Length: 461
Image (cartoon, rainbow, N blue to C red):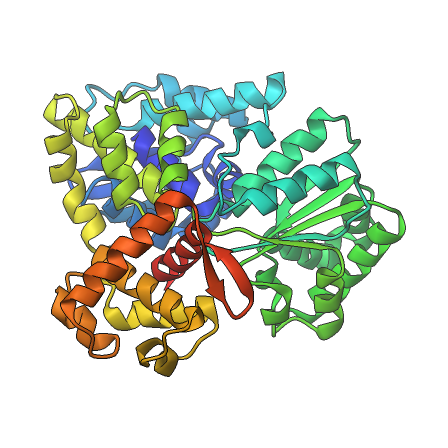
């Protein structure tokens, strides 16, 4: 069950998980039903809002969907305080537990979280980041703003879901605290909006403004959530202006660059683009391998199994955790070690739905975009480097990522012979080995950089 809870925390974010599920909720599975009991009706309503997320992680970790049942815990279970509620759930005995009873692991986790909060929470710092081509600029930017807070504010980090944005924001918060910055606040855009609405409806704007403006560092995750929320956007603009005037550091994340946040007012977009902007993309194979090496999971995995997971779990980095959780549960269920054959069998259905078939047209589109050429150039008889280098790379990528035969690849890229495809494949392989550069309309481009950029686009599309 710990694997299921970890997967849910990874999906919805640790802050939201701790807020709504961390305070003594009771989970157990009976037959094909997952029963969730919350401390009170208010908390139960919020927990019900995560129904779809819970169902998705059940399918990911357990391998099947479950019926969900929500209820408020009884008075006997709740007790008079949250700590008492956790203790009651941890010690209550209703008779022998079935193999799927999960209240004990969950309440242990809740007690551990409570102990951490009382003893002083340990936050991530930048040393926890696995750094590679996909996030090098983002991590360097984070280091810069922490060395000189307020000089480049706001700092906007953007990238697709699962690229590590929230992890980096949490690391920035932890590093800022470690360096002694007075007050650091990390909130999601949803939490900021909810706080603003509550302030308008009763709690008062002065306390809201004090919370978000009397800080050394304000970190807001998923700013695209503000789209269409006019009153909140006005308050956000004033908050950012106030912090910038006072020389405070603002850190924001989004799923797209400022220019593409079309539902956010132009003035605010200009403000976001006027500080420091860095992109982050999904981790490459080497980074995924390093993430698995650093995993704190108790499951012992061989290097061959880790390599298999890294090869299968492309795109969203959360898939790595999902794969490890699946193997952890499978190892317990079948009472066996995780061999390569066992891992292949257990993960096959998990990733079948995620494996996107890449075609020749996908490769053509990605190469044309990367090199700034059109399809006619790629398929033409031109023999200058601006045309031949993208064409050779397209053929090399076609052999790597598709099941198309030599003749089919040759026909697609300008009715060329299969021997031309073989020659192109060898030349690109040689250029990779020697670290050569391609000629592009924008100037020389390192061959490995070009390949990495194109393959990220293929994975993301």
